[in-house]
Image (cartoon, rainbow, N blue to C red; front, side):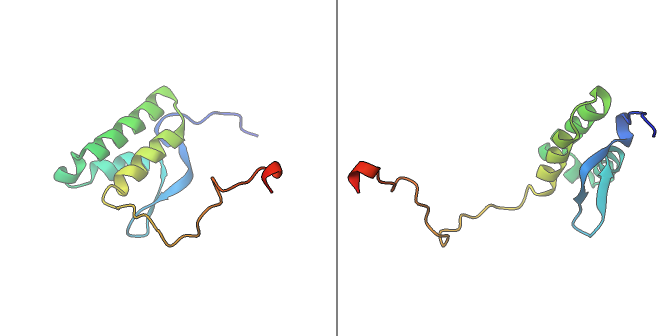
Length: 102
């Protein structure tokens, strides 16, 4: 069994990051190369700059890969708007009755 610890840019994400065109990013190096190949206008977006900073911190200072994954995922999904679904079933929170009030 090889007990060598992988560090730096060769470290793998816990789960590969899916890209819009079906490819995936498996390592920190893959993510860094993807970001650097983006068009300049997109590459300079604050979300991508933050993702690259997170990648650098993780690769060079042995941080948690989840931090870099979150940065890349946020940058990839920066144009996705969250929509509140009011059709969901209502919760019971705030409606509980104490045993003495039954």
